[in-house]
Structures are given as structure tokens and as C-alpha cells.
Length: 324
Image 1 (spheres, rainbow, N blue to C red):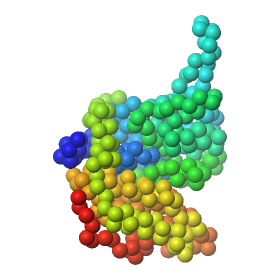
Image 2 (image 1 turned 60 degrees about the vertical axis):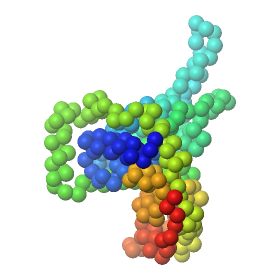
Image 3 (image 1 turned 135 degrees about the vertical axis):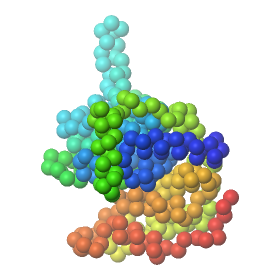
Image 4 (image 1 turned 60 degrees about the horizontal axis):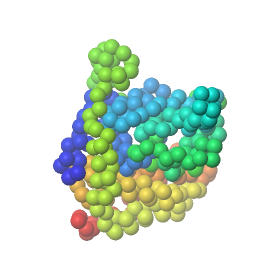
């Protein structure tokens, strides 16, 4: 996998997703970078903004296996990971694998299920394996979760614990479309599809083998200079030292910035990381890992986003770093 081939395949995925999903193209690029880094993504936004559609379209276009779970209050851990079922014909217990045995898992409205069910994902998201009745089962490669949740209608929901939120590489919002033209384009595409869900008519843009090669390229072929690593470390440490922050980013936040910046460098056709790659993902990778002090949380001019902006402004980016 060379840089031109990588860029060609990336463009094919982005064009295919953009042909269905109407919205900010930067969101699509960030989603692809997270997938190339084999990381989990949490979409949080109001209902009807295309979170689930984007997740399903992206999963189908990558050519990988994917399953969707609608999280509900009565969903049990066994409904996700599977269980052993007695088979009378063979007089033995046989493992019935759950939907988590796939490449891309779409966890829709993940905060609708109780903590016991949510915790069934913890081991899978971190170790890429599940334990069923004492037996460990490895998950397929690649494996990552694309989850959605709504920030409203919180009655009867179960907010994700910090330990689980921290396992998401990115937390993003799709947002409302920005122009009247895009609003009309959504309606035009609906008429063209003749159905609310166009997934069945979508063909994969790349092969699963190509996707795995792209992930390997990001992991092994993209150089990041020590000065850039120090820059990432300074940003992460500053989130812990800011006077308005109760709990700063964990080291996993720095690892997230490392993975995402390398994926973005590859996406634009480079084989080295720049400070701009890091800045592109700073908010999406770090904001959900920060807890603001109570006395600052009620101030209208203080938010996790403004804190990251302040940190980026004060942290000097390296200029004479190695470009391979």
C-alpha cells in the first residue's frame, strides 16, 4: 500500500459515503480516520440528524461485516455477546454467538440500556475479545464500535460511565445542515431512494482486504517526529493542569491523538504527521475525557471546547520537526 493508492481508496470511501449522507464533509473524514485507526466512535446529537444513517452507510461501504443493535432497557448482556445453548441432538452445549461477533458494530442509542448491558461492551472495546461463561472468544479483525446517543429525553436512560466513554476514540456531533441547499438535497435524495433506508442499494466501495491494508499502512508507515509527540503530550498534560478542570484527559487521550493524526496524514497523502493533524482532532479526541469543575460549569463562557481552544492557543507547535 503506497500513499497514492491509499489516497485513491480513501477518496472512494468518502465519495461513496458523501453520495448518500448529506452533511459536513469534515465529519466524514474524521469518521474514516477513526476507522483507519481501528477506534470506536460515539455520535451524540439530537434525533433525526443522520447519526444512525451515517454509521450504517459507512459500515456498508467499507465492505466489512456489520451488525446493528438497538439498545433498549430490557436488553441483556447475552443478547450482545451470545450464550451457550443446549442442543439435544448432540447432547452438548453449543455457543450461539451474539451480534458482537462482527467487524463493525452499530450500537444505536447506547444509553437506553442499563449499566450491566453497557458493561458487556467494555471488554470487547478494549481487548477485542469477550468472555462467555468463563471461555474467552477473540473477535474478528478489524473490530470497532460506532455508537449513537441523544442528549435529550434523558428520562429512563443510563448515562455511560466515564470508564466507557474514555474508550471511545472520538466523540462527535453530526449537527444540523448549514445551508438551505443542503436541506433541499436531503429531500431530493429521499425521492431518489424511494425508501427511508437506502442501505440495501449501496455497494461496497472497497474490499475488506484493502481496508485492512489501509489500517496496517497507518500503523506502520506513517512517521511522527519526537517533537510532535512532545506537542501531543503537552496538550494532554495541560488539560489536567487547567484551573477550570476537575479531571483532565487520561493518557488514552494522547494515544487517541497519536492514532488519529497518523490516519489523517495518510488520508491527505503524507507519510508524516504535522501539528495541524493533531489540532484537527484535539476537541473530538479530548473533550469527552475532561470534567469541568462545578464552579466553572455554570459559567456561560467556560466549556470543554473553550478549554481545548485555550490550550491549543497557548501550546507552541513545533516548526522544525522531521518530515521523514
